[in-house]
Image (cartoon, rainbow, N blue to C red; front, side, top):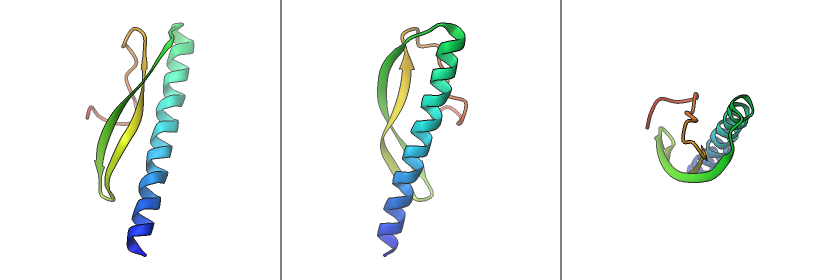
Amino acid sequence: MDKIVTEVTRKAVKEFLENVMNTESDAFLVENQGQKNGYYGRSMKTVMGEIRDLKVPIDCDGSFQKENRERW
C-alpha cells in the first residue's frame, strides 16, 4: 500500500511541477515575445523519492528561468 501511495504522490508532484513551469514559461514568453523550443528532461530528488523525466520547458533564446525552485 505504501508503494502505491508513494508512486501516486510522485506522479501528482511531477504533474504539478510541469504545470507550474509551463504556466511560468507561457507568461514569460507572452511578456517577452518569445517562442517555445520544446522541453528537456530532468530528474529531481524529493522526500518521496526521485521524480524522473520531469519535462522542463525551454525557449528559443534560452532566457526563461524557472521561478518555483532553486537551480538544480
